[in-house]
Image (cartoon, rainbow, N blue to C red; front, side, top):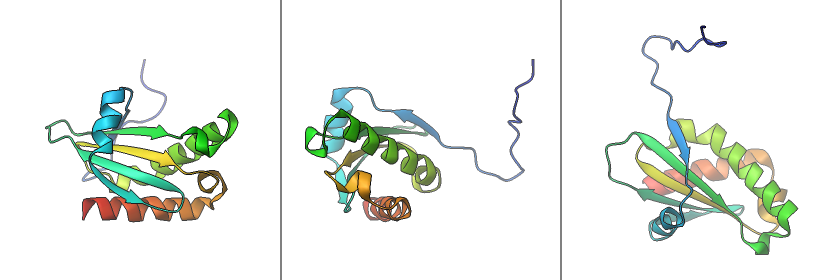
Length: 127
């Protein structure tokens, strides 16, 4: 049975970037020792895995300083959506990224500003 949506790409279009989720504590700890870039709403940590796998791995975290479980989940949902919109254009294959939410700012910041913040943080990390 054929797929419900066409999987054909226009000629010359780059292949879509495969994004996986970080799940192991060790991966988060390795990213914590790598490059970082701060913004008003979050902290970005980026680690070059230096392997030949052309995937991007992404993790999210919010401490209890962000608030109760509802507030932390809302902050992570916003970070996931921003990453979904920005990373395909700006992420480098073979990198691990961790977005860490900040208290009050992650959930309250304007969404367009969140996107700009992530773009600037990625440019800073990859400079």
